[in-house]
Length: 155
Length: 252
Image (cartoon, rainbow over all chains, first blue to last red; front, side, top):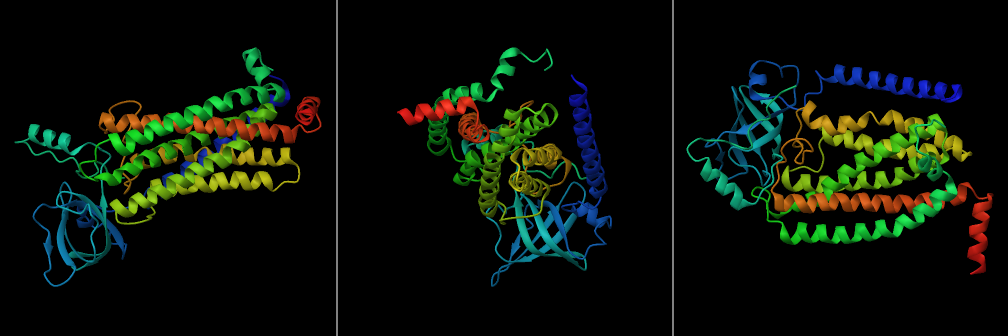
C-alpha cells in the first residue's frame, strides 16, 4: 500500500472511530432517558414520578377487563412479574386487545390508578397457523405457558 | 494495487469491463427477480395459512420484512463501496455507492409505509417514536442526505467523495436499527427470523419470506447494474470505449 493510500485509510478509519465513539456515548447517555415505557413495578417503585405523562406497559390481567354498559369506558389491570396497576380508558381498543395480551398505554396517574389516553396492543414475533397453536396449547395443557408474556428485560 | 486482490477483480473494476459484465448480468437478475417474486407472492398470499393471532393481516410481512432487510443490506453495500472509493479512489466503487443510495432509499420508504399500515391495524397507531421505528426513519434521512450531498456539488467526483464520507459515518446506524429491539423496550416486536438460533415462524410461512428475500436481492442487482451502466457512460463520456459504443449504436 503506498503512502497516500495509507494516509487516506488512516484518516477514514479515524473519522469512523470518532463518529462511533460520539454515537456510542450519546446512546449510552440517553439510555437512562430513553425509556419507552415503565412497567407497573417500576411505577410502584416511584421511577415514573418525574413524568406527568408516560407510557405504562405490561400484560392485561385475565378477568380484570370491565366494560361500561353505556359508554366506551373500560377498566382493566396491567401487570408485570411483580406489580399491578389499574387502568381506566375511554375509547376504541385495538383488535388485538384481550386478556393476557401485552399492551402499551399512554397517560397519567390519577391517585392510585392510571388514566390512559391511548392503548396500543403489542404482539410477539411468533407467526404460526391457528391449528398449530391449538395443538401446542393442548400439548402444554396442565402447565400454563403464555407466549405473549412481558418483555423479559427492562433497560 | 495490493497483491492480495485477485487480478480478475482488478480487471472488473475498470469501467469498460464492468460495463460489459453488468450488461450480461442484468437480464438474468431481472428474470430471477420476477420469477422468484411471483413464486413468493403466490406462496405468501395463497399457500401460507392465516396467522393464529393476526389472521390475514400479517401477510404484509412478506413485503415489509424483505424491504427492511434490503434497506440495511444496501446501506452496508453502500458503506463498503464508499470506504473503498475514499481510500483507493476506484471510480467504480464511487459509482456503485452513489447509485445504490436511491434504491436503498426506496426500500426504506417501502418499509416505513408498510410498517405504518401494519401498525395501524395491529398496534392501533400509524406511528410511534419507538427505537426501531425512529432508527429506521434516521436511515431514510441518511440515504436522502447521501443523495442530496452527492448532487449539491458542481464536480461529480467531489460530490461523490463528500457523500461517501456521510455514507460511512452513517453505517453506525445499521447495527442500531438491527439491535434496537433488543437494546430498548420497544413496541416493535423482536426478530422473527434468526440466522443463528431458532426462528419463530412456521415453515409454510417462512419459505415465501426467504424466497422474497432472494427476489429483492436479485432486483437490487438488476437495478444497480442498469444504473451503474448509465452512470459509467456519462462519467466516461470522452473516452474511447464509450465512443466505440456510441458509434456502434449510430451505425445500427
